[in-house]
Image 1 (tube, helix red, strand yellow):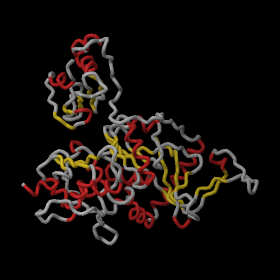
Image 2: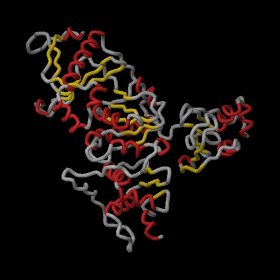
Image 3: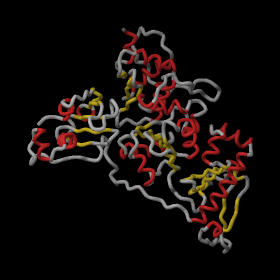
Image 4: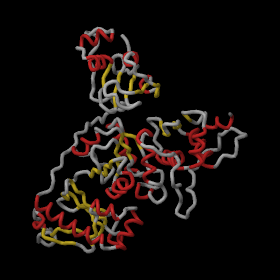
Length: 461
């Protein structure tokens, strides 16, 4: 039986070695759609596919060697087996919809389709949102605070219809089309309460289907009092910003999603989950499955750490992409350029630009953030006087199962699949993508794949 690599190369397709996954991985232009230079993946020794497997990240064609002959040459199953040099009775035809390099969720996943609220609720929500938006736009102090605290411009306020509710809002529930509820304490009908705060609506095709209120800290009476209030009757739909995008950033809050869209909306779409545990609904899932890349940037806390693996297990194109400073993009924007952070996570072919990024992560007092405590320096003696950040990265690569890909076309970080150290991962990302001294060192390094054993090789030759 021949293998998929030979079959593809026989068509004049030039493939380059790309990695060691599944016994060896090769990439090149797709023989089907003729798109790209590295989007067609071939695994000649893939253990689950007859004669190896293939998959195109653009046209989505995939399968084993037999499937390749059937798709490429228009052969029947029997003819394809003959071309592959195998017995049709011995080998089964395998053509999955998408190659999975990671296991799928053992419990399965079926996205939910959420209906819009009733017509009356939609009418009231739109009127409330419009009034709140106008109120915010006429309040320069509130606009300035929103820009200072969240990085959001007036143009973004207009685009997403952010608003200001300056006093608690009470109305009969029936006036918004909500069913009546009786208070156990008073025995009287409850009223719809919308607290004062920043109004964060979600609009779909011009309809306000959800309203959240970000309440002032001064109004929170206890730790259990929610900072974000979900207005009754709102749809639980997940906020999707940007349709038919090649890449999406998956993060938690709507405001952070708006910030990413503001700074890098021409590069990526955004999925704002609301909470780390949320999953994409049917509408969002239909867009995510067509994307070539998902950057998973859930908050750098315990909830985000626990929720991130689900995305890696269920989406082949998902990559973990934590912020290099702070807990989330809303923290990071003060010290790290949001657009540069997004660009660093995308394949170089998607953008043109320099590796030199405009901002360095700084502490509150203007000092560089302290490095993570590391074991004694293992670097060889007699090294040049490298900057502290360069030495720090070298020690971390010696300590952790991480390697750096540094070529003219790509700067990336690859971590061992089972390794999970959020703090170290964030610090390595911070150094590799946002430290000028480290970037210069990696540019000059003689090896395209840099790890703990060859990191200081540049010093010796």
